Length: 281
Ligand code: NAD
Image (cartoon, rainbow, N blue to C red; front, side, top):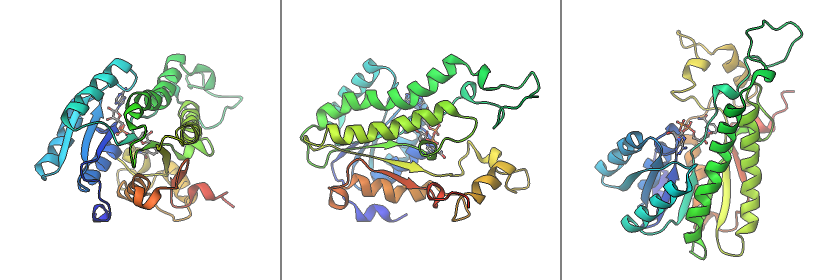
């Protein structure tokens, strides 16, 4: 990956939530190569520390901070620690997010004759639904409340949220995650307008279907052949393949970079091999 050489974020403070996870750890590693000081925030400190150590070992600047994006006090403590270590935030990437099984139906369609043990829409757990909405929506809004205060009036300040294909058309089985990501797209546009007089741009990426450690078993059988769900995804992705985490990186760096994207504000950038453009016909 040589994208970093096209961008110079020397001495910029880049705060990334969910940076102990698959995608945002990857973002953190690549962004650090641009000269930025990268703060890796995660509720799972051990994981964020592991990635921060890898970045530091390569000679770049990074530090991990245990943070719960659902607790204002926790975010504020982290804000103060980062300010003391690196200075205040220039760019915020809100990556903490995800789904929960308790907010997921077993079947794609409700039927007249579902077996009684089936977890249908009517069995979805209120706490599970709240968990998903809170993690994705509040878990994006609260860090912005804390970090964007320091970003007001700063040259090049911007925020990147992580939406999803779900935000355009909901995927089957996961109504809460779909709704929460639709809310993220909507909120991204709201913020872009709200902060437009104080110099903070706000955009989002909407990743298509990537193979990650978490979904590999759902997408490929023991022989490495695509499962039925994987086949459906590939059929509906005009480019006919899954994406790689590395293929999100160009979009992230582009949106972050004032030299490239100074007039880009309120955009939800699909990075999806054409999935969101395709009706299937
Ligand atoms: P991941 O599960 O690997 O990482 C998420 C991280 O968030 C984890 O390290 C977790 O510990 C952390 N986290 C969870 N709750 C937290 C909290 N309360 N406070 C702080 N940190 C918390 O997920 P990922 O695949 O890297 O996804 C990152 C983002 O991209 C998420 O918003 C996800 O919804 C979105 N996304 C992922 C995909 C994909 O294919 N992987 C596709 C579209 C969108």
